[in-house]
Length: 165
Image (cartoon, rainbow, N blue to C red; front, side, top):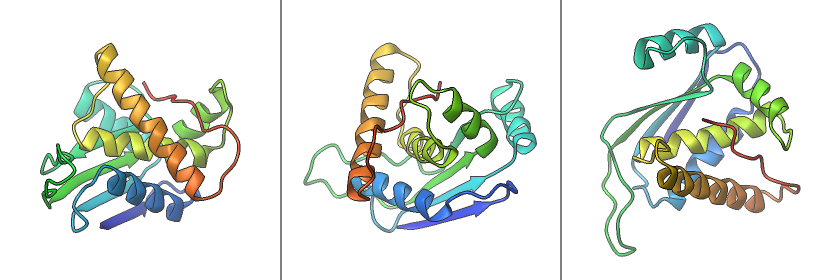
């Protein structure tokens, strides 16, 4: 799996953990090991510009996903996953820090960035949360991936509750 993490935010983030959880999420979703993903960490001003340009919404947001080849997880366990460019995930640590502090289960900016990375991966794979049933599926899968990664890393305590909208 080729995953690039580029921090342009000026905020110190755990880039290795972002890389690790992205790799874990893609493996868990059975994405071809030669697929490519880019994760870019930006400041609030850059995120706000992207949010306005692509969503026509004011203010910075937490995560944005820009799919390329529209890869999807294989439908059956024995299907061969397609290879390709997944696309880009853009994260904003300033928004992540605020969301982590405001969450019912308060957590760190890095823990929120882990959650947002998985959220972004799932969006690249075609998952959405516009409808109640889609939201339940996506957020359930997101929690299972974050919990699995945290367990694999030996992290204790409750996983962050979804704060993304």
